[in-house]
Image (cartoon, rainbow over all chains, first blue to last red; front, side, top):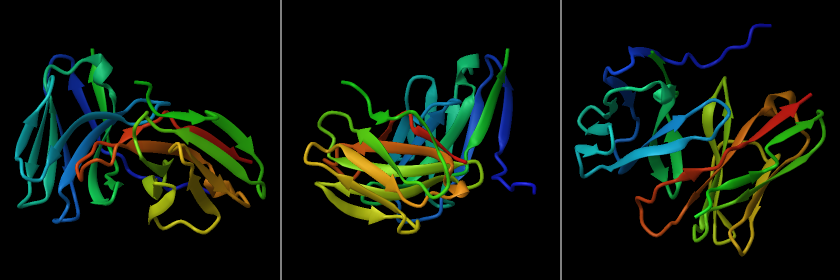
Length: 111
Length: 114
């Protein structure tokens, strides 16, 4: 029979454009969040993190924004490159070192 | 520092068998977490070990178990394999020195159950 899988949101951008990937989290008490990038056949790779006492954090070409009021995270990638093509996950810390992961967004960069 | 390593990278088993997967955390990291990743369910937390003790557990049946050794290396075991256990099993390590430690993942073990 037909298997039912997660419907992965997709985003296609032109090379050089900026990308914005969004994520809604569930627990208003979560105090730590991480964005991961996962390429095909590999484990998730850490991109950037943010603590709940911050609204914004910048890294190299990436910025994470946190809106605690609406429980929303976004990842902005500047000047997107073909190597940025991957699935991006947000993760919120639940307890100990247990993280709850979003469904992921598949980013495709068009050369 | 070497990253998180997992062995084996690929495994094929048949229903009813059992399997043991191994994870070596980043040197100095004391916490090891395991996740199952499938197209149908995404990334799901299995359990976390710290100081050889299971500290957190996800919603998986008792067929899934794990342990951690004194050197922080961890193994997970799945008994009586089912077709639905086919997945990428990911291990992640954390220093556990603060409440906002980053979690780093290994490459995963791809398990196929026939």
